Length: 207
Length: 207
Image 1 (cartoon, one colour):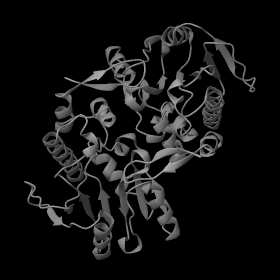
Image 2 (cartoon, helix red, strand yellow; image 1 turned 30 degrees about the vertical axis):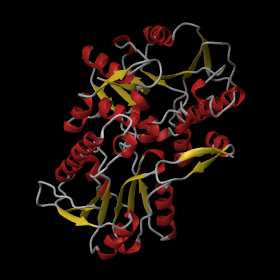
Image 3 (cartoon, chains in turn blue, red; image 1 turned 180 degrees about the vertical axis):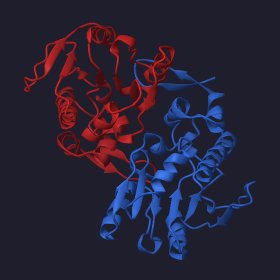
Image 4 (spheres, helix red, strand yellow; image 1 turned 90 degrees about the vertical axis):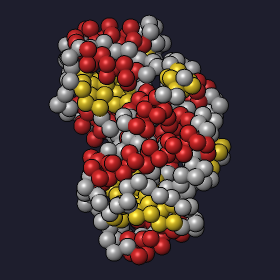
């Protein structure tokens, strides 16, 4: 099997711009990517591709970087079309994802295993036979991918994990990283924010 | 073992007031409570207490309703002080929680099993020996409860489930109910809102 990570460093995570500068966002996404890479390695996954819309070099030269300026769906479907082994598509903004989650996901007995993101997205999708599946990200992609699996007669597992489902897109998501995370991505945010505690949910205050 | 559900129907869920009227919120919380009760019954839990700050009558007369106007923590700690068996404290706003989740939570091998809520809250906590634990809800209660367990020398399991961790407090949470839910609570919201699909997370539009 192979893992593929769509990754955009340049101008990343604009929805975090109310709380992090451009430079901070680009540093932070790299730390989250490294966390995902560490979890993949910890799960014994050696073949990892990164798909980036612009030139990108990672210090780990075992990674294959594919530069593709096309739309994410077009790029990924071309990738799936060429794949000759199971593919795990995994987002780069999952700093709470562990090697154990990945091991459990790729051990699915179903044809497809999907991990929803917050707000109807798709954080991970494991596709045993990539010739029989096409992705359609954006919007309510979780429901779309469930429907595609059904229409293709592919059996489906929905993997239920708060930690794997926590993608970091909006300022409130950083709270989850502070509450549940560890490692460099958490430390980066911990240096910049304090908890703002009230009777409701925890919010963030700049340090 | 017993389950206890803190429940406030009158004037419930003020943070949903931008999208639901007072009457709608009171109807909706009752549907969510019924969903939690069904999951508890499905998990074989028969002894269920509801703690309400004001007079409340439920159609299921097997339920014991305890009226207590005191602060939630005070009420629950008095309850734990009197309990002579394991206690599951479970919030009433968890419409994605299933009987399977509950069975797994109360099957923990640890002294305490805790399910975080969004934003650092505590959705469920299972306490095998209630004489050795006190709760402190509000704010980052998840971290507080983890710290209390540690300071009391109680072993702790953190139960990792997106569905069990999804408490419904804010309008965006209703998206999760529409995406992942089923049953009357979901149908109630489905009649009132449409998905608003964009490239980011799904949002809600009034029907």
